[in-house]
Every structure is written in structure tokens, then in C-alpha cells.
Image (tube, rainbow, N blue to C red; front, side, top):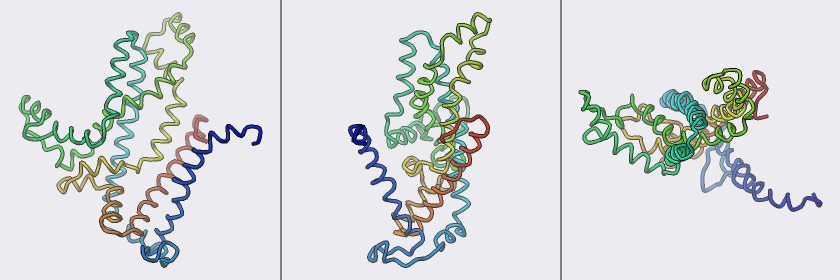
Length: 294
């Protein structure tokens, strides 16, 4: 450590960040097992055991929250995970530099829009009276659809708009992996008469498969961590049946209802389930193809 003190000094801010903002706050998780009172503090509040967890499991909202959160998470994984891979494979095959950069710029740009702007655009484009999408529906003889208030459309609107916003940014890591593919493999395949699709299937995809597996593990590990901000902005009393997820329930109970122990218990349950899924998927991936996080 004395010899490489400068390297340890460089890593010190990162180490301090995780200690202060990630590990130290875990001390407060114990309020999930207490009847927390702000006047008595964490240590002074009486223990309640698993009372708040039992309340959540027995509540009317439990299965609706699990169904909505898991439904959105799986929908987003099924649609949103393959799209950046396909986009990266297509961009990688473009030979015109100008067009390639143009496509990259256009697909990256939505990532830098704030969630508030994205949701505002959704309300504008999907307006049943004068929205662009409903104008097209009328043009083809259909009836206008109130996308933002009908529960049946909530998950689709949420997932597809998120895919549109993030697909370009998410494809960067796959493009970086494709850049490391040995050109000699493609040259040899061309000599053997392989078509472009065959080279993509037998060279490019296997080459980026470790990256795909790692990102798949990470995505499954946060499948219940559906983002709060966008769901909350899109949520209204008419679509609550489909839009009420664990994050918004925690907000209503913890922030609006001041039920800190109950909301902490719900949040801890969410984190534990994500952690178990991460461990399980990582174990399966390591057994199947020797690629895993650890």
C-alpha cells in the first residue's frame, strides 16, 4: 500500500461513495422491523418483528402490485433487451460513415431527454382529440383510443416509449464489443462463401454473447425495480389498475401516508426478491455457458 499509495488515493473517492451512500444507509433498514417513531429515532422505536411484512402480504394491493411490477418488468425485458442488440448489429454492418453517424446520433438523442419531457410528449402525441397517433388511426378508419387512461394500454405505452428512449444508448456497449471482433474471421468466412447474415449469426453474435449474458443477468436482477418517476408521471385514477407498482405504493405509504416502517418493509421485500433473482440467474448462467458476474 505504501508503494502504490497514489493508486489507492485515486480509488478512495469511489470507496467513500459506496460506504457513505450505499452501505451506511442500510443501517436504517431495521425500521422495517420496528414501529418507527421520528421522535424516538431508530434505536428508540419499539421492535415489531415481521408485522409490516405480514400486513403487506395480506393487503388487498399485494397481488395487484406484484402482477403490475412483474408484468412491466418482464414486458420490458422481452422487448427492450433484444432491440439494442439488433440495432447494434445493424449499425455495425453500415459502411457509409456519414449515414452510420447520423443513425447513431438520432438513436442516442432520446436518452438525453428528461423523463418529464418524454411523458409530456406521450400526452401530446397520444391525445385522443388532437394527438398525432389518433389522427393516423382516424385516417385509416379507426376510432380514437385514449392511450393514457385505458389500463390495457399502460404497459405497452410505458415499455415501447422506454425502448425508443434507451435503445440507442444501450446499443453502445454492444457496438464496443463488436469493434473487438477479429476482422480475419470475417475475411475467412467470405472466402468460404458465407453470406452477410451467416457471418452475423456465426461470428458477430457468438463474439458478443458474453456481453449479452452479463447484461441479461443485470437486467433480470432488477426486474422488479420498475422506475418510479415515469410510472408516477403517467399514472392517473383511470389507469391505476395497471399502473400501480411497488415503487408508487411505497411513495404513497411512506411519503404521503408517513408510514415509514411499512414502506421500508415493502422496499426491503422488493430488494430481497431482486437479489435472490440475481443470484439464481447468475448461478444458472455460470452452469450453462461459464459466463457470469462472479
